[in-house]
Length: 117
Length: 113
Image 1 (cartoon, each protein chain N blue to C red):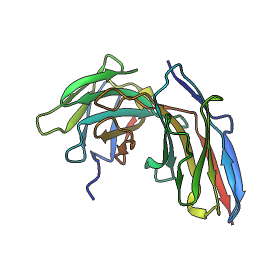
Image 2: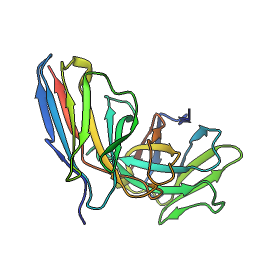
Image 3: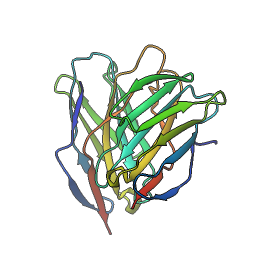
Image 4: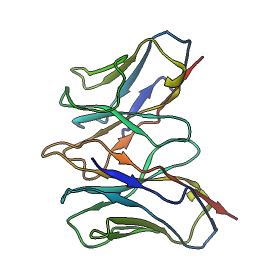
């Protein structure tokens, strides 16, 4: 079974600064997907960024980027130029896909990020 | 763009009652998932359906059942409700191997009193 660990329950950052959220996982699989989801106070689960394990290049989506270290089983999220709207709970998630369909997501415990003005 | 629709948004039930949650996936998505998120916790996988057949089962209590209908909408039925069932219940849908991730609905907040 896969496990996902987020060791930072809470973090805070000043507006416009950069912050990095940590995530480690444990798996014996070679092909899998990793995701960061954001859950703001509205409780909606919003996909932030995704990474395919077989791709060495780190994913980037505007101000969000990841540092994917497959050998170390580490998948950190970097948020640049933090904005007040980035305040949310951030979940790291792992998925081992099936051949033709998706499968369950295993989530970490979450990191509550607060962006201060 | 169409999103995953869940109803109702909020539901209050008494202990031992029954609740039914509904989910309408994004058109052409072939997999539906149900998750339970307790207060201050991460979402826990309950069950999923691929092309209307149960494809995976997680930590879903025996008191709960789910199905996916011919129009691809799904329902989560919860009987003999307990106080501990109070949670946010998410439905999500995806297409293919979901390498682009799921799309989650807004969730149903169930409160058992």
